[in-house]
Length: 77
Image (cartoon, rainbow, N blue to C red; front, side):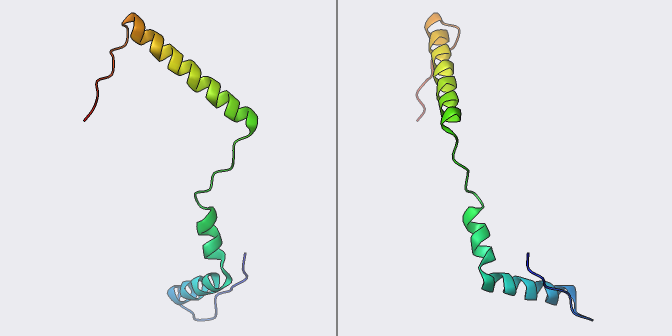
């Protein structure tokens, strides 16, 4: 974190303007924007578990449709 201290008799708005300008010049804002929505890659084991779970749920739904417990999907326009 950058060491920027508020000057004597400096308003909060001017202090924040100065801080934002310093952050912009240092490139910290660009760094934060790059990693803001970045999800960490799942491990191999977690991907396997997720795939097995989705297959299990899909199989269960297909079975319920076959026996008539679940209404068949109608095509949406």
